View 1 (cartoon, helix red, strand yellow):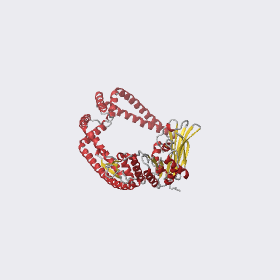
View 2: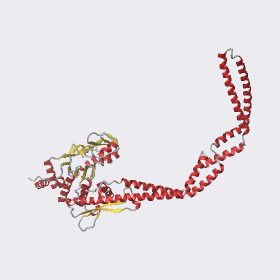
View 3: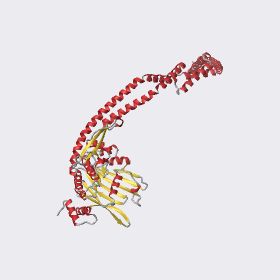
View 4: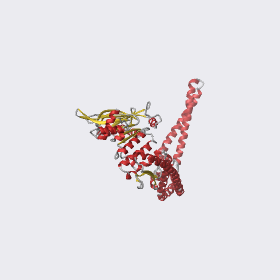
Length: 547
């Protein structure tokens, strides 16, 4: 429930602190006193759009703080855990700060949060209803029915997503298949062209090396002759040196042995160089291709690689063959996708039909519950019905195939029709209240605010509405902004909203009324500006205080 509302510098309010109790809390006051400002301020604290116009003239910033207490089992606690918002005890504190440029900061338990998160969480705590309630909109009726019986549509949502995905896959493949003939022609030509060229793995690198050898054959051959002669001479010198060292090895073994070992290594390495030179000479002299042949081959490979946008013709050749094989199986794959769509459609229809049956059972329960609420609201001749229509296939969705709309007949024999089209203003107010009495009891929202729900009614009808609000407030906190003395008389807590002029400044104030002050305010609502004794007597009767 809403425990407290603290407002600073909002429109005509410079500073205001209001504590709320459980049950039915009524707010009255003359027209223009500022009752709507309280709703704007509370909406700001719960994440509604911030506007610079809300800032009190001359103030640099405004703030609104709303404190709620919730039972331990309320689902909002889990959401706080999910978003890493800390809390202690059972209190939750929403705070919004508004700057002069219209920008604002949002806090929950003194942690900064986004406006979107503040609004989502606020919607879990408070619902505000006026004469033009959202329940007048047919598009809200399906969600209201599902919420009434806590109907889970998750399985239908999943089935619909699978159905949509399967249709998307089929459509995409059909589009590709329509282009497949042109693609197939291209693939066959490309495969034939690459196949004729017959590229091999690593061929370009090999050809580049071979081309380099051929292009520099003379220089390489001359260098090899020089190196061969030098290495041969070196080998002879090394061999003679090795013999000379061996002859004196026994004389100075410690000194000579390392030198002999070094000479051995030099002989081995020089021999390796010589053998390598001979092999290289063989490659240079034995190259089977002419430079022109190599150049032509390299050009052909590089041209194909550019044409088919690859640096590996062998891999691209394999890719083209695989794609051509897949296209050849296209008709078979199309049949598989079509079967998937039919299967997914059937699964969706099965889940949607189950959902429709659950909703129709829930509708009967809702109709019965609403019927019980109508007589106390002086609508004993009215009838309420949940009207179902099956949507065409193009309108199917994650919520099923049902279009639901609330229908009403206000008099015996009168044709029934949509809620907003048939009922008058006063009847709508009572119907809205009847719906809320029934629907809210199945939800988790702890606070309901009614803004002049009695509009278009009066006398016994307004008194009946007050009775129902009082009944509803046994299980949920109700804040009722009203001009009706009949509704005000049922309040467990009564606030009066008024304006004062002080030092040339007009401010809106709120005061909690004592029992005697409540009696006088109800009398004012009955009589107007001049309160008569007759009005006071009528007020006593309304409040059950006749002397």
